[in-house]
Image 1 (tube, rainbow, N blue to C red):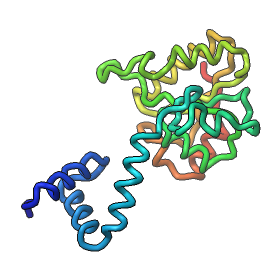
Image 2 (image 1 turned 60 degrees about the vertical axis):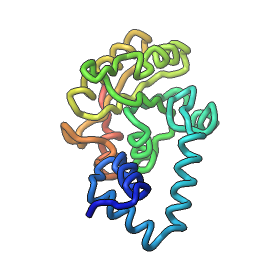
Image 3 (image 1 turned 180 degrees about the vertical axis):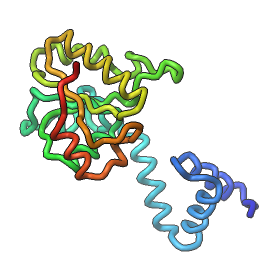
Length: 200
C-alpha cells in the first residue's frame, strides 16, 4: 500500500530511522497510531521533541544526561576507584540491571574502527587518559563487546591503563565471541562480570 497523503508518507519514512524497522513495520506503526492511538502518538512526538532537545552527554562519563554531570557520576554512593568502560549507554544499562556493580562508568559511544572514521578522539580516549591520570581510579574494567573491533578497543584501553599504572581487567567467560552485551541474558552477563580477568 502506498501512502497517498504526503504527511503519512513522511511519518512512515521518519519511523524507518529506528533500528530494525523496515518500510512495512514503519507503515504498521504509522497506521496503528493514526487508527487507534492518536493520543499515544502525540505523547510520543512530545517525548521525542523533549529528548532530542534536552538530552546531551555527561561531561564526566559521556553517558546520556540532561545535566552536565549525570546522576551516576554525581552519586556519593559509587566507588570512584573502579571505572567500567563500555561501548554504549545500552551496555551501561545492561550492566546496571544485571550486576551489583557500584563503581563508575566511562561510555565510549562506539569502538575503534578506522574504516568507519572512529578513532581515539571520537571515543573520547584522550579525556579518559586524563581521568586515569587523576590518580583516583585503581581498577579499570574493560567491558567492550567481544567483537573484532571491541577486542582492538580493549587492547588499546589496556595500554592506556598500563601507562597510567592502573590495573586493567576484562570481562571473563560467558559472553559469546561476536556477541553484543546489550543482548546477553542477565545471569550470563552477571557471571562474566564477576569473573573478569587481568588484561595482559
